[in-house]
Image 1 (tube, helix red, strand yellow):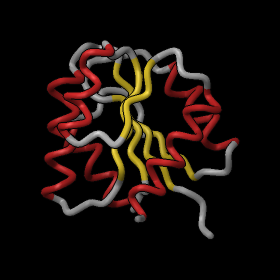
Image 2: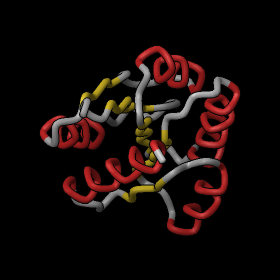
Image 3: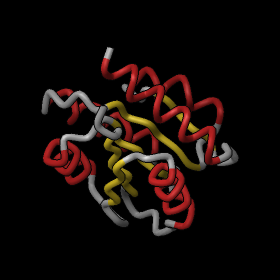
Image 4: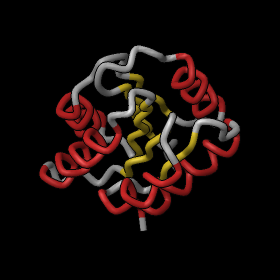
Length: 132
């Protein structure tokens, strides 16, 4: 079975990438193919890269507070592109925003204190949910 392909992205003006690099390493160590798009990506760039790379999961890391604008935009673009990648959101996100992000199209929302092994498990679940 081929490894799970994950695109990891930092969207918007958020310039902090230590956490996303830790997550990328944990996913790689768990045997996944990880593509990191770097800082300051637009939703359009993220979706285009996900389609081009044919990924199973898109992991978006946000600390900027713009998640309620950016995540629905990414989800809309994924639908418009008929992309089947599961969208997993992580970072500094208030608990009360989680239901709205899931309603907007996020398969899962991983909060900032989630241990790396739990992130790996949840990305695997998101990929499996996409396949079913």
